[in-house]
Amino acid sequence: MKNNNDTICCVVVLIRENIQSVNLQQQVLRTDVSGMPLEWIGYQDAVRLIALEQVSYALGRSLYRIHGGINALSGTQSVIEVNAIIATWGHHPHKILFADSYVPPLSNKALFRRDQSLCLYCGKQFPNFKLSRDHVKPLSQGGKDKWANVVSACKRCNNYKAGRTPEQAGIQLLAIPFSPTHAEYVYLQGRQILADQMDFLLAHFPRNSVLRKRVEQGQDLLA
Ligand SMILES: [Zn+2]
Image (cartoon, rainbow, N blue to C red):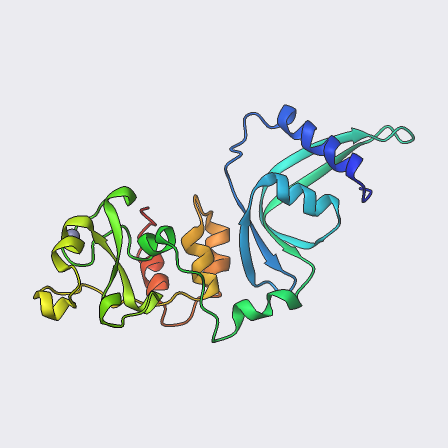
């Protein structure tokens, strides 16, 4: 596949005609060349990376086979195969993600997934729109907006707790909040994670990871 925009446009147009029956929502796990998980990408981005020859190797099951243009000389049709996991060139810019000091960005979506859509005060499960980010040590008392100081809480519990610590409010915190590693953060952002992708991610989780235990016990991401 040549490295030019015409080729890529041709491929992307053809995708839409050729894979109607395939689940286009299935995400591809992109790793760096050493196999460190980086992010989830859609099939369009995966095809673009393959066409631009930025993929070093692929792992896992084949998700899509994309048929491209027919070569005028040989009469053969080009085919791009997209696997569940693709390793791309460019290792060094991502090194920071795997330093011990790295902390993934805090978002409500990832936080609610870390806490399995549970209110960590009353223990009930809620849809995302009924959850909120509670600061265990309130901001008004010098608490930080950091993973280790935030939990999912239903709006009722959050309102009741208000500007107090759990001790001051007389309520109990059901789990200790923690900061995910980058690999765990990638997991928290995934949807419809395939078994081979999960195995790959698990290999990069810390040994004592709470999320590892949950996955090994067969608990799903709920949010
Ligand atoms: Zn609650």
